[in-house]
Image (cartoon, rainbow, N blue to C red):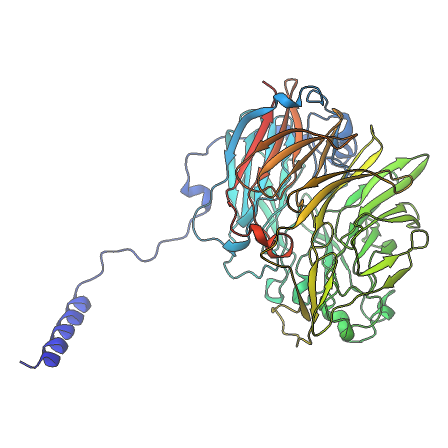
Length: 581
């Protein structure tokens, strides 16, 4: 028999057999909530979270045993009065417990996930979020899981710079989390059961959400991500009891609104960027909410948006009751370097003045009067900044280098001199502290056609991938802008700082070490290798008189912008908690 005929007959018989025999495998199954699939978690958290409200958060410094809000307090100082762990005994610090934050199933944007959260601690219960929609309630003394929740994240949700979540807010017996696909979700703090949710971003347009919400009075405030997609950034407030929308503040003004004259192209405002993806700070006495904003869009091509491009790369002082802008200050007018100015605004009082400190991606430290918004002084904290100069007294910007079609080497690189991780302020030392990314980049400009839901860069900025880049931790005197000390690191520092009354400054490294520095001198006093890089927010708290330091570890995020040499580093995801023996 002809071999071709034999093969054809054999194939036909196999197809016929398959058609007649039903498949024994169940291809689909009815979808069920995540918690129903895991019956091992049946516990409840303590009811203490029901007593947390805005007034209690305003007095957070008086209960250092807790970490009640994202920065530890409304002032964003990332400072704790706890001093059981101090310069004299920190060398004895040891792991107390470890929580492994594993995942189940497929993951949205798996190459860019990172564990970036700031755990919240309320009277012995820790609430922590993670990438891809996870939230846990843990016993803060031993890490035992009390409940877990997972919000479903579509695999195709557009994520510019990482599948990440930076934390939750707790108040009124609820845990609030902003999911990556832009749902503000309220969970029952005792059980993890979802109580309500509100969609506040449009993922089809390229918006997302990565920040920790902030509870102010009777509202939950959140901001949008996604300026790289040509969206119009916004800040939103919701009623914390019902989820009802209260107000929305668009960052980019439309024609006729104050600031609209700073957009020379009448169409540019509709896709002007200005996302607001880092948690704000709040002064209850002045009743002002301070929220920073990101880069204009497109990132590198300023020709399609002539002007200063308000209110991108700015801090907005908002009325928390209405969202009205009381004053603003723009860090980088007409940004063409992707130096989005979203970093924290640290509130502190010095010599009778109410001040605000901001370490910006452009390499400058700004000190403002937080009541009026007037500049007190500006200091270059990154000496290699070559893009331009800012006058120390009047804030006037002089541009020196801009992206070109051929490419120009400019410092700092696309992640800025300070990526999103936060600085700190110690009332004991009266010093400001900042992490530093010592990386330059090649900046190119190219005309890009806007298409909704697609990246709208207008060029590119690249970092040399086969080169080890450095970083530092720096301390500054806010009264003068004088640099007091510098601690040199092997790689860029892209983790938030934690200052304590024990005269310690905790900082993580991309290679996994958690370090304790002397906050007065910068001397390295203690170090522990955690196995995966730290790109998160360490916190401290106490239970039964015992102080703990907790740090989420899990390297990732937009690595090509700040440390491409570590792209292949270990990607574990764990919460590691330390205490004295």
